[in-house]
Image 1 (cartoon, helix red, strand yellow):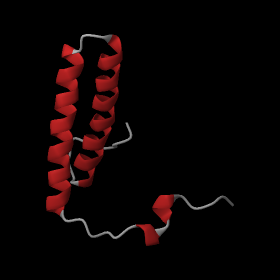
Image 2 (cartoon, one colour):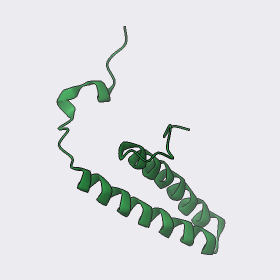
Image 3 (cartoon, rainbow, N blue to C red):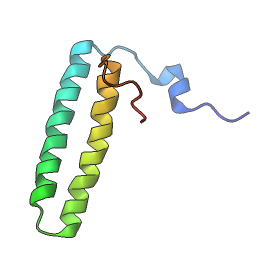
Image 4 (spheres, rainbow, N blue to C red):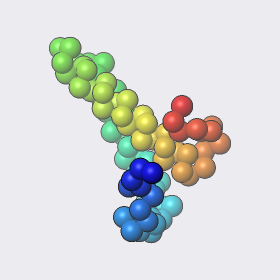
Length: 80
């Protein structure tokens, strides 16, 4: 058998985040995602545009996962 993944080692997790903390994290992630989207559209060069689009896509995944954790009925599977 293979080694356990980090998420299976319960010693690494405190499980003490409040719903308020998760909602605040979602709010911050959505703000940063929107900033990167705006900056990508206004980027002068391709390298800068790619940088902001990469961060936008990453934060899109973060927001989807946080919404799933909070029980957003529109998010059935955050991995899709």
